[in-house]
Length: 107
Image (tube, rainbow, N blue to C red; front, side, top):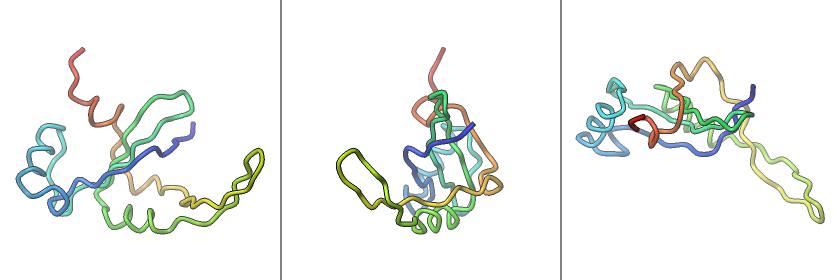
């Protein structure tokens, strides 16, 4: 099954502020780390949402910058788009069902 990236976010003390970072970690069940987390929000081929989580924030930043120019053919014209290479699965040691706004919902 293939994950299709939809969005990303950085959950770090620098991005969110130390107090907010700690509160978000506590509310989402993530253990605070010095460098924080990189989050990639994906949908699989069946439309289920997942969050892939890495503690290697630098890897995710570099990955986002490394997009390759690729040609995408549409019906009547051609467009150049940037497409990053595949994410290294071993960099994303956590995977959670849903996106963060769904993690704390009551059933």
